[in-house]
Length: 273
Ligand SMILES: NC(=O)c1ccc[n+]([C@@H]2O[C@H](COP(=O)([O-])OP(=O)(O)OC[C@H]3O[C@@H](n4cnc5c(N)ncnc54)[C@H](OP(=O)(O)O)[C@@H]3O)[C@@H](O)[C@H]2O)c1
Figure 1 (cartoon, rainbow, N blue to C red):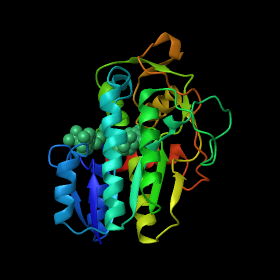
Figure 2 (cartoon, protein in one colour; figure 1 turned 60 degrees about the vertical axis):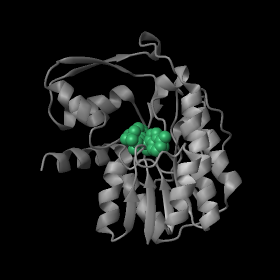
Figure 3 (cartoon, rainbow, N blue to C red; figure 1 turned 120 degrees about the vertical axis):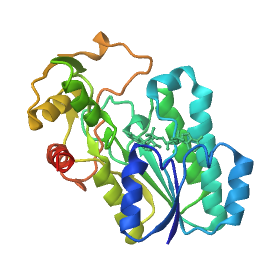
């Protein structure tokens, strides 16, 4: 199977692509320099010359705070870029898998969000990712939309906290924002399962099981690695940022992945081998 992976240089792509190799898939791993999804002419020219069986569309404008000041840039990548890729998928009659976000919800619920729940993003990033979802649904029936949250992997939040612990003994972390930390490795395995097993098209919620605040998550990282760093729990209001964050953004993923604590432990154990 020949797969196009957009956004392959990002956090998720860096974990997923080696796994695609292990599974024997042929894939073309693209970043924005060799394949800018917003450049409609270039996308069409390249796609007319190559044969594909599947598209994994990870490319995204992902800086949630900067998106507030650059909405046109966020929409250009997350909506228009996704439209370009979705139309290619339709033209070639191949499936597209798009990774979306918990930020499509407003976070006012107090129970996990189901795929059928009403969306209502409260920041530009979430609105532009939702616009991307809608472009896909408009363009083709052969889609997988995977909403996930708080991804960590090589070079992400967990690694940053471990580096931080080498230099500092105290950190303030938000305690009133609830979500689910998710290991990029686990999500990559699910993506491969979906492709191999021809799962039904549609929207999926794929996160680890359970929920945590950012301070719970950070404490657990230091606890597992025996790092002596005090985590001071603060409110979002003590740490104002340009973009609003949904207060409670737990996705109902029907326990398709292990609980977040055991996945985190696994990630940290593999790292120290
Ligand atoms: N990380 C999370 O917690 C999380 C949670 C939910 C959903 N998601 C979604 O999952 C996907 C992957 O996330 P990630 O964390 O791996 O993102 P990331 O680390 O920020 O990487 C973004 C990727 O998109 C590429 N890209 C940006 N603009 C592009 C353009 N105009 N044309 C082509 N490629 C472009 C980047 O390429 P360059 O390296 O060339 O810039 C990079 O490969 C994103 O769509 C994101 O919205 C992420």
